[in-house]
Image (cartoon, rainbow, N blue to C red; front, side):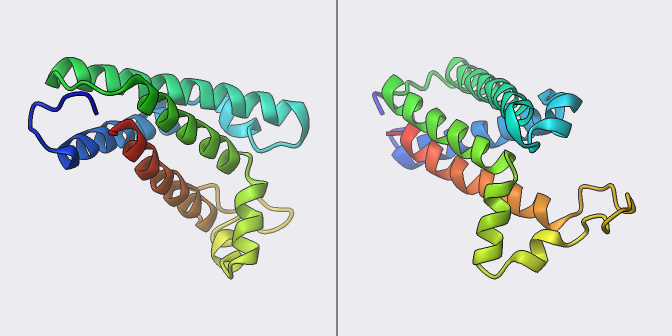
Amino acid sequence: MLADPTGSRVAVFAAVFVALYAAHQVADHWIQTQHQADCKGQPGWTGRIACAAHVATYTATAVLALVFLIAGTGLRLDPWGVTVGLTISAATHYIADRRTPLRWIADRTGSARFYRLGAPRPGRDDNPSLGTGAYALDQSWHIGWLFMAALFCAV
């Protein structure tokens, strides 16, 4: 942290976390295209490219949020800290959105049933909703890593 008008590192962290959290919500639910959402978890290059495109727009949204935060508050952030923080955010977002890594983690940590909660039954499309265990675990993963990213951005 180069300078903080409030004199508090905690305030800088809080402001950065709020900006990244707001950017996360906008990028994951408004900026992400339907194609990216549908394809990012698919195997092979189709899924990798869709996921990388989503992570690129997600990260650009986070950068924009930080620009607005800086412009609106006069806060000065260390560019290296921001680079490390946004790299952590982007890398962990990609990992989660490829889907199989989180399912693998859930299977090995005793959360397999929760991960599959609300998923359509095999051969049916009977629960197309956001209310699934996989979605809840995905979002909590992202928010946990946003916390870490904000710590690095606020150094």
